[in-house]
Every structure is written in structure tokens, then in C-alpha cells.
Image (cartoon, rainbow, N blue to C red; front, top):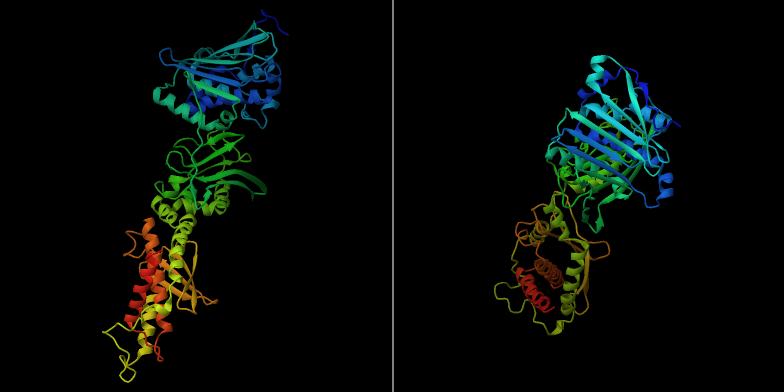
Length: 529
């Protein structure tokens, strides 16, 4: 083990001046800082058990400090740290070790590229858990570029045994970070490392402010929470890709938060506020209802990532296949997300809960109607002076055709299928002392061509559908009390029709006054319920 005075020179191979090209990489500040966080978190996860031996409540702490006046950026952690061999790997351009395979820092270039992108001069200092040594190196890119040297001095100092972790300090920064950039970095890192933060094992602080991620609110609709776990496979170019995660619908919604966050090794590669994955094949136009509300997380660990870890290498058709498979898995969520708030509210007005309440109130009124003493009621034809039945003088030349047309027009089928039908409500209504009729009522949101549809079911019951989208009802159809009133009115109308048929003449003639008088009686009884 080297002692405190064993400073030494190290050949970085190739010349360190080549690091100057890293300043031209297409980084963004949050992705560059994420390279350091990847190293810190990977070090922690690899050595978590050892770190917890001495401190059972240990958690990883990553502190990021930017000083715009001094043009410095410092990243410090209390992870496992690096002993000599790993420390040299960290500053060597072409170095890679077995610990980096299948890890967040798989390319072994993050520290060098990110630090060189941020500034001209940077240093790294690290002490491994249980080591008596602290290793420090300073990389001065302009100096190495001018001299063509590749040798760098490694300073070795004594360190307390209780100390462990790594510190990176960047000076002469060439990339500025103002308040807005700092705020963006906080938000993006909170999103990228949301799973680490949620577990409570990792703590990240940027300029004296802890970062955290709040889960998005989930829509409750049709008596369920619209969030579903995903787990499916697909084959592409003889390789099996495994996708897990979830899809959900936000409520309240928001364009910045919608879309998919794509994870690799529990770290977001694509995602974050205003940066989530929103392919047109699933989300449509950027201002669509789907683009406003649909969101989720996808684990795509099998997908190759680019060097900056801000995107995937999938332009050979892999992305297209992912989208095709994903769309089939979440089509029902896409359909619900397409619904506007107004459409959802309208449907909720006719949900199972509302349907049960209406049925309860109307049933009490029907019970009152069924208590009617039909023998004591006035004959529905007796007091009508406008119309009389006279079989010797028919009122119409073709009574059957008139009745057929009346029934056809009143009960004609809707030409456009309804996009919603409520639960069915059942009532048993007495027509007279010996005859009852089962009536099954439901609401629909259909076209505006008719207000009611009545059909006789195979069991002899009447199926009644009320179109609440009819122009006459539409202004009031979302009001709870109107729903009850409308249902009572429809029952009175249908029962009046049925009773009039029972009392029709031998040739089947039904006078309008009969239906009107029956409705008067039934509405009176239903209003007492």
C-alpha cells in the first residue's frame, strides 16, 4: 500500500490534450452532471452491503455546488470511493474494468467527458472505504494541449479510515449555468433518478436545495384507477426484447409531464419535464388530448444506449417495432385519453353510481303507481269530447298504416351507434289489475335524430333507451334532478302507450286522447312517489 509521500507520475495515454475535443460534445448540463451521479450511484449500489456494515442507516449523499462568480462546479459524494487501480481507470481515456459491465457507467468515459465539457481544468480526489490513502489528480487541458504531454502527477495523502467517497472540482468553466439552468438541472435529475430518490437510499442536493420527484396524479374514471402494469416481449432481428413498466392517465393533466419516461438500469435515458417520449404513432399531434394526459414508464434495459446516455441506438427499425408492440398493449388507454374532460364528466353523470340513485328514486314512485286501484279510476275515454269511437264511420282510411308510421317514427333506430350506454334499470309496472309490464331503462349519448327508443325483448319486457343527447334534453341532462324527472316521464309515456294498446278497439285504433289521458293519470301517481 503506498504511503503518504508516494506521489507518482502516471501516463494517461493518449496525450491528455485530446480531452479538449470533449468540450464540443452535444451535452446539456443536466446530462453532463448525470455522468457524475451515475458514477456515484453505481459505486454505492456495488458496495452497499459494505457501507452498511459500519452504518446500518447509511444513505448515499451527492452534493452539487456551482459558483458562477468563481466559475467552479463541485460534485462530492460519500460513496465507496476508489483505491489506486480504480482511480487510475477513472482518469485514463481508454480504460475500462469488469465492474463497469452492465452498469450505469458502462462506457468508462463519463467522468472524463463531462468534466472536460464543463471546464478547462478539473481535479478528482477519492478515498476508498477502509483505505488510509487519498488520491488526487489535476487535469489542466490547455497545459497538456500546448505541451503535448501525457504524464500527470498523482498525489497521495493520508486519509482517516472513516473517510470514503469522491470529489470532483471543475474550474475555468467554459459552460455557464444561470438560475434557470440550475432549476432545469434540479428538475431533470429529480426525474432521471426518481427511483433512487423514492427508495430513500440516495440524497441529491444542488446548490443547497434537495431534489425530489412527485408521482403524477392518476385519473379515476369508470370506477377504476387508470394505471396498469406492463410486461411484454417482442422479437426483432433474432433478439428478444423485454419491456416492463406502466401506463397511466393523469388527472389533472399537463403537457410538460405527459409522455413516457424510458428507463435503463433504473435511470431515465429519455424523459423529464417537457422531455418525455411522445412518438406521433401513439400521441398524435402535440396538442392532442392523448399528448396532454397519457404517461408512463418503460424499462428498456435490452436497448443499446448512445455514449452520452441521452438516447438509444434504435434507428435500424427497433424503435418502430417497439411502438407497434406498445400501441397494441395500451390501445384502451389511448382511447380513454382521447376523451375530453367534458366527455368524461358527461359520462360520469350516467355512471353506475348515478344510475343506482335514479333507480332508487324512480322505484319508489313506481311502487306508489302500482298501489293504484284501477277499478276506481276514470275511464280514459269517458271524458274526452274531441274524439269518439264510431266503427261505422272510420276516422282514417288506413288505420293500420297510420299506427305503423307513428310507431316507426317514434321508435326508429339511431343511424349512428351510441358512444355510451348507461347501466340498465329495471321497473315492474301494473297496467291494470291483472297485467304488469317489466320495463328496462337505460340512457345513451347518441345522435340527435330521436329522443327515445322502445323495443320488445324476447322475454316480453320493454327495453327503453333515452337519448340524453337530444337537443331538447341536452341543456338539462347533466342535472341530477332532471334525470329523475325525465325517467318518470318516460315511464309514464311508455306505460300510457301500453295501456292504450290494451284498451284499443277491435280494429287496433288508438286515439291520441287515450294516451294523453293515461299519461295524465300516471304522471300524477308518479309525482306522489
